[in-house]
Length: 471
Image 1 (cartoon, helix red, strand yellow):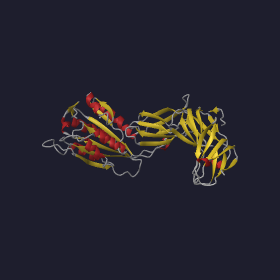
Image 2 (cartoon, one colour):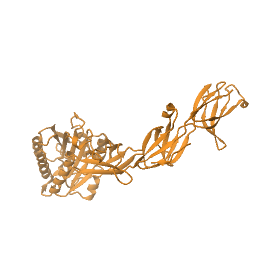
Image 3 (cartoon, helix red, strand yellow):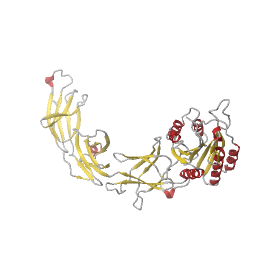
Image 4 (cartoon, helix red, strand yellow):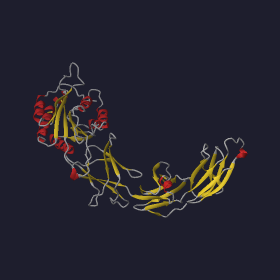
């Protein structure tokens, strides 16, 4: 064989908690210049449970929550491509004589210019009942109209002063909604929570601690900004010396909590010679898989909202070229199994007379010729092409006197190494073989004695055909 040189998250909380659940259904946006603001739908879910009579900061939790929410609604009045709705819970059935764990209602459905209607409804609310967070979250999925466009973004903001009181599991509900693509990773804004309560929200979403009315306003603004503002991303696929030179490979962004596929982009270097800019929603944590051979992964990706983010991964690549001259029909059907050096997992099956990119490193090759050719520790180097060339095949035409069992062997270092079995119901067959010295062993089907075994020794040369008669 000829081989060239290598070139190449159960108790009531004592103060207010604000939970933001954000959900998107969208089309990917590839270029910042092409980005148009999609329709955003925000569903406010308001806690009117009895504990909202409690005190916080300068007044009663219910009064302060009403005030802060109303002020916020005024701040987003007139925002383009925005529709809002309002749902409340714990406001219809008193705690006694028996609490209701299904006390939740969509009070104002989605629509444009309905902020005044929502504010008027907020004014009339009086705390009465319990806190069915899990059940309420389940109902939110049906509050959004069927989207007329895949680019519509659906957002839920839950304002509550307590955790689940109805034996529901908000964490499980949240995860289920995420897996369905309705809800992404939640944001939790807590007001004066002690550490034990704070920890209980870890399975629901990202926590923000608001210790005052002012900090609450600031945090709410940050979270809303994440919902309404664009966040850009640049993915640097770095070579061995840290330059972002690698490109032309698909990248998949997964929601790390739910495992849902969020985006797919084929990496591009733009006309300025830099990795192109992507528009990605900053809600949640991502896992990115770069589909090189083998793939490269980066987990725990959190984006800074409204900023230009750079995600860098090491993905240096080189090329492998497989060559064999001669019969074109045979060559195009000839494959090679590619594995990491000393690892039996198949990474790729490459056709001969093609060139493929691989992450730099050492690989073991198993070429599916007859007999098979193994080449180990093939070095793939940065931006180099490693050439593997094998001799041109030959062929043998075997004529048999009748049907019967048989097999073919190659002689290697004075040993017979099995190559293949003959097709027992054929009397003539043609086999493509690599150059070498072979033996064929055959016995006619009706010959019931081993002495009738027929053996022929023959040689196969590149580009030639050899005829063997077994009679």
